[in-house]
Length: 441
Ligand code: EPU
Image (cartoon, protein in one colour):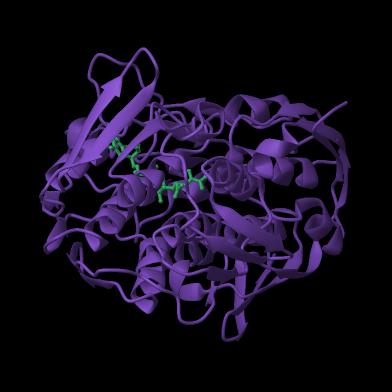
């Protein structure tokens, strides 16, 4: 058996977890480093498959780096190719952010249609629109699957996102920094990961500021790092271990968990009766303190309940006291775990919620001709049992692992490498809190 976990569940998980660096900050900061003139040193870079995939891409483009333990030293000046490798690029959603360093270095580049987790169509129409407003000429060649982009004379602009885009906002910031005039992004996304990227850029000399959902970028001639930058912890990883603590009736202290980045999750968890205790600054204890109540949540961009948290939440709700509802507004197809959970005893079905204007309500491009399944109903107090499960996307992966750790008996979960796109030392961490897990590789 390849690429699978074998898990024996049914035990309360207890102990300490130290979070790793945030995937969705690390990937963007690594790409932004390619704009810098000097060597960039980054601490707390997680050793996860998405980071390795990005580094392979960068190596292919001629970038040079050393990655020891969790410290990455990276040189963007050595880039020598302007065409992103199709195989690697099409597997990593963040790869289209490479437009910025490649245009900066070569004024022209080729980037494949981005991939990433299979959680819906994930088009980049708004982002391409924004790039055009920032002075990039860009065209898609459907035969090769590549975008071809060139810089025009005016490399700055103003753009209003019709609906916010997290990575789109980040790409436009990177394009604006090296522009030849002020750029302004309206209706920019509010995710804190973007603010960490801005903090990194400004420490290297950039002039980027946020005024709520407006971002103003004044160009600079060059960027250079003055001191090493440390990636903050991963809030999605925090949610996974917090959920594990409550769902297995355990007790886990999470170190380096930042409550201000988890506000909506903590509020919902408190509402359903999960035990939460702040032990120290950035140290949170999550523990089972009795029956979990059912809930109704819907996902939204920050500061809402994050889409990345709902798959974990769903498995917790299989243990709740009553029927729960989860509505997904940000991505299509983020319920790949539903059929898998049903295999181990969960009772979940799709329901339709009356939505007055779906084009407004959903953050993806809603097509009235398409059939969507965006809301699930979960029956509570289900006794989960072991089974053979398959991971289809990253967050679904953690969800299936939580289910297997709740369930009595043996489970085999295929697709470990998908979970490990985003979770560092997963097996080791689960064992540290008393879980029984083995990996076949
Ligand atoms: N969208 C479009 N057109 C665009 C841009 C976005 O239709 O031009 C749609 C997307 O398909 C999606 C919605 O708009 O339905 C929101 O997309 P957004 O661009 O905000 O998301 P993203 O940048 O692709 C990032 C994270 C996700 C995280 C979301 C929300 C990275 C690499 N990915 O996605 O993380 O869920 O923001 O915060 O930063 C994960 O880590 O597992 C993950 C999926």
